[in-house]
Length: 240
Ligand code: ZN
Image (tube, rainbow, N blue to C red):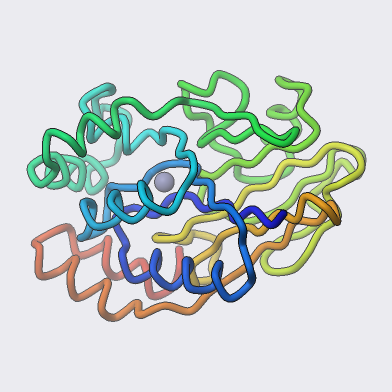
């Protein structure tokens, strides 16, 4: 079984479509989403529609909860808060309700799926690298944990006490305990502007971090046309 794990789409339709095409090309049987479907990008409703039809389960991200009015934006920076306001004005009542009802965690096939961290999932702690990953794995007993939220793709092995893989490539995640940060579909921040996701092969026990080119210029044009903060467009060029 090949499970595609997507996170942090952030209303970037061009990136989402490119990732789902790659999922099809690589023979993904199932799609799971780690949240932040909306916020920042120009196509929140289109992304919700596609995720609802393609992902068998989506857990809640902090931007999803903020857009749904479950949490306020006092912890958000100015551009993030402005994008949430913009997004709220464009969501239908049905879309808002959908975001409000997403669960914080999900477990299937021996793996845990959470947007921020298994430690206090509703607090949305960030996992940037090895030290936060170690804390997160100490807070649960799952063998395999998939997270997003920090927009940086890497695989961390508990026994190795270090990251085992940054960027693209396959990592053994079948023996021992691993945390996989799948990165961000719609707004990568690890210096690689290509859309990120992970492909977990439950039979071989490997997880591959995948990067996909997408039409960044079109996504940027739409952000500017909608009057969203220009920084949300410009940062996509460098993926930072
Ligand atoms: Zn995010």
